[in-house]
Image 1: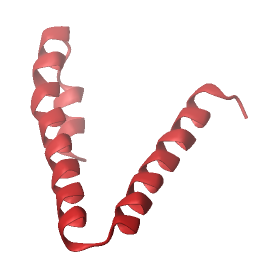
Image 2 (image 1 turned 90 degrees about the vertical axis):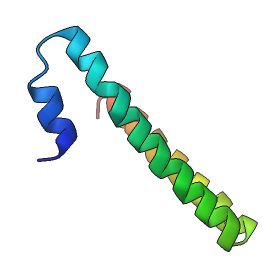
Image 3 (image 1 turned 120 degrees about the vertical axis):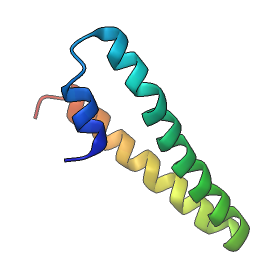
Length: 70
């Protein structure tokens, strides 16, 4: 069980949920920014395009799974 699941499980109050989401969002954003910076500095542009494409493809599949009833 991840730290995110533990925090969200015990936050019964909306304010606590909002308060817990701040460090989680900052952590996720910093990991994404770090990965993008590393790829931009050490690889060619086609690798950065591939990385962005794979992220978008996963997000698109998530949206399809969320809104389309199979």
